[in-house]
Image 1: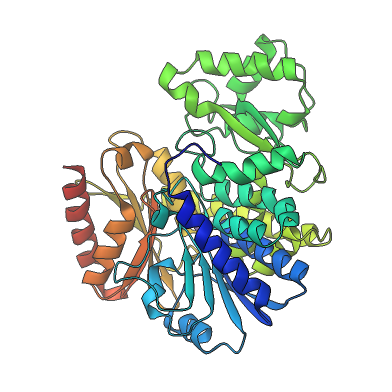
Image 2 (image 1 turned 60 degrees about the horizontal axis):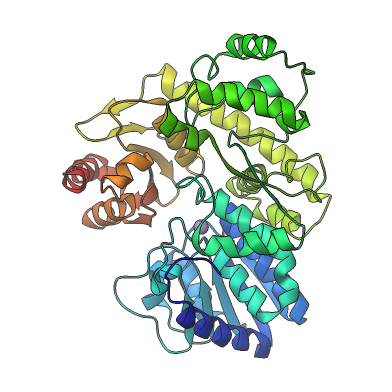
Length: 459
Ligand SMILES: [Mn+2]
């Protein structure tokens, strides 16, 4: 168990109670989120049900709406298990016989009703924004039901890195350490210190280094000829299609040291930290690296195909080809979207925030990623990036911020929740990344409120 001071006893008590409910259920409805953390949660929950021989169905929801809450309340299944969702709405569930394994901020309106077991790190003294993701909470319950489910430990790690829970300390911490240690013990995962640039398994070396963003590296980031020159100077020989993980350890070390030497000491801990590899996964398809695995799942979820992601989690090899197509679409859409925002000079700057309105030009399911990437591209002064996109049920708002701002007191989940409520919408999320849905006519008013709230938090 991790060396943090959460209330393990209460957590264990609730896990036991929920496990008992699962073991005595006749049928199960699993409701989960469409991002990597939600899909891996769904995979873990489905595997758990499968091993219990429990009749079950998995439903994916981009978020909980009145309709989906209704579906849950009226479900004919014996038991409903909500993963990576639900904590913010516990007072709206009117049925009994429900289990929630989530990590989002709990409903401030009060505790849940009888017959609902609500398992959330915040309730036991762990921080759900980086010490436990939805998949980790789901995994803890799964393992409580049957220790054989420890073979899902890597899925919990994928969920955690998918939610950027490793970005705070350049490693997974808190309750997320439990699946990590389990998968190390079982030989499912290798835990190493290495550069934390995205694409260790699948990107060709030059673009791998060139697209390093956190932190940017002088003479490397956005500079392919700088990368080639550096590799030549270091005497590193490589094929054009060579991946980072295709290099031998000595070559990696040489490059790593050179990259570190170009960074201020405090930034080196962002570049180098823990990385997670799953050696038993197929070499093609991007499932060997935890971050790439998460991206594969996210690309499924964002294109209304979370089911394919679920099949991947459950080990269906055919699902990978479908995901590959999703992923190519995803990459193309993201780069087109970034180019569009830049070319049209869409980003506006206020006193404390930057924002852009993508209208119907960027899908509401990817606008958050675009906001995050743009947030990294703008340097000093650091400001949260707010993005609007048209959605079916109103205007979707996504917000992203730098960790530095969170350390100074910024909490975007509070900002989005409060500002959305004040204009008749709904919002929430995490301190570094949060979202909302608001009436389209209220954008201006919403921005003014956001600006005031950010100002007050950073004061
Ligand atoms: Mn999550």
